[in-house]
Length: 219
Image 1 (tube, rainbow, N blue to C red):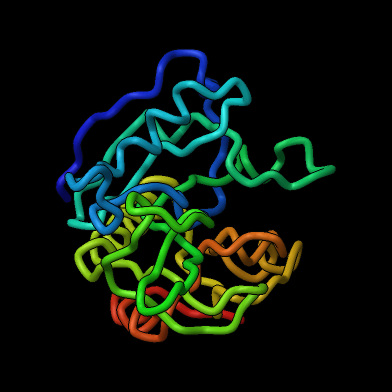
Image 2 (image 1 turned 120 degrees about the horizontal axis):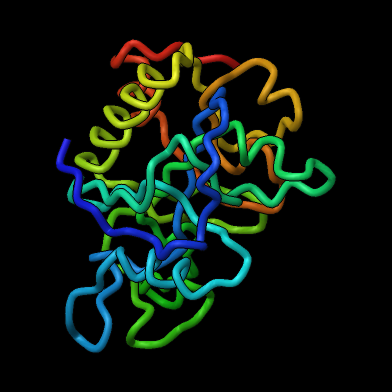
């Protein structure tokens, strides 16, 4: 794995170690190399920069860029808020490791051009691979890149090995099934436990790679 440090500032996460039972895949809803800004390349690490300025200690210990580069922000035995599950007092945040994938999530079509972040400007044009799928009020979604998926699967298996988690991925990513998703699976997407989220809309080829890596699919 190509892991690079990109630390969160002290105080942006909780240093106390907690038992991990789950891995949750997220999408940053932020800029990537597929949403250039001012005519130049965009950096996925701007999402981490945003976490560093937030006052609510929301983020993730891992961010996987589109080229497969993995950014580490803090030791994943500690914890941070990343789920936003009301009434749980951070129970699942403490017991899970969050992986953020650099991804624009839902897209809007204007003519023959796709735009991200709910805005139609030259700096929100999306140029990468996309998925057409009717889901939660949207019709177009930014896809993950293959190198990114491969790196994310390898990282997920490493986390499961280090924290003694039996890898079982909830299928599909578009189904809301809280709290059952945490009862039947150990790896899931944010969209499985939040009906208002679109991270992540995963096509079948991603699940084929997940299953091919030896991770059991459950639904």
